[in-house]
Image 1 (cartoon, rainbow, N blue to C red):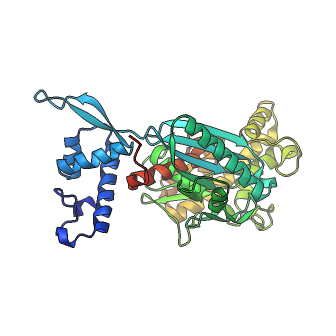
Image 2: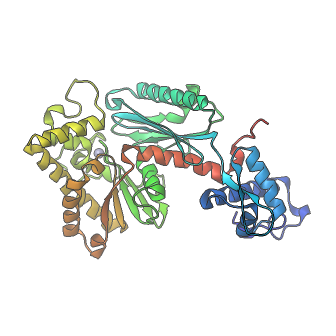
Image 3: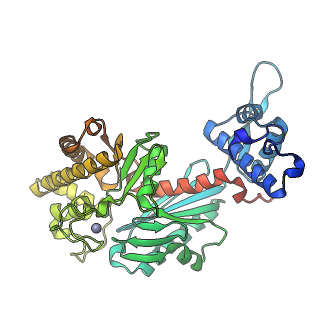
Length: 428
Ligand SMILES: [Zn+2]
């Protein structure tokens, strides 16, 4: 409910007499007002009760009651004293607490599983990644590994005295978010995998909300709210992994499509006689620009799926590619140029369709951005239909391989800000 619809005196919907309000209405209004106050302090930073009252339009009595509840739930705290002026006694300011409330974001990808946890104020508590060969593992084994990672992380959060407010798992595939099911994740070899059910049956506490979402969409949101394209309402994020996902923010909103499947540029066929793709087709765009394509061209002796060495995570693969380039291996430079060219061609398609201002390059693209971006930009400028292409630039993500997990954490925090009553009262 928009706060302008609320009565500033009572916090109840305008135009409704007390007799017309049912308990359900009052609960909804109370929840909405708790969210309003919590979000206000979260966005504004430290402020006094009277400032919150003035700026939200709620009266001081209502604010006192709402703040009391938010404190009891461990979401707000008092700091200070704050001197509002030269006259009158100093009052304590309000600040976001949430130091005991944790948000956990995870990412399962082709060659790693990552966990990232913060408290409600965004303080990083845990940031870890393990190499894992999901491409050559059964879905059940990948899920076991994910469950282990979650169990270990929850234990560490427990040891810090932090209670988990929610878990979001990022997966590179098409996701039915309503049921927490991965419809298909080609490079993981997953089809119809209910991640939410698997976590519940593995003993993840049922009172912890679980969300499953597409990695590129989550990363795009992270870039929009805290990355290099902060606040740019028309941006596109490309994941730069073995698979190449695409998260589209248009007019400040994530573009989902009818089923939540929008943005699968990685599986648009650009070369029907090209290399086989994880999705079963041939010549998809990601077979030209994905990390497996770069590795195939730059270090063919270590191509994905062809060697039997110890598992390597993407950082190790990139380190090897950079080392070979330093040793003068000409294949590496040619491979990076080829990737840049195909990236520019894909970008031209995106610019013609969505007219973004920035295309954020994540994952391995960001690591090689100094060589990839000039080639990709030249190709985009050559192929773009209009001056929109000239005004669209590439930017290298600074969130690295952790962008999706960071976006996953934001989903949990946003849910708490939207409904603070999901956080239990702290035992007194
Ligand atoms: Zn494909």
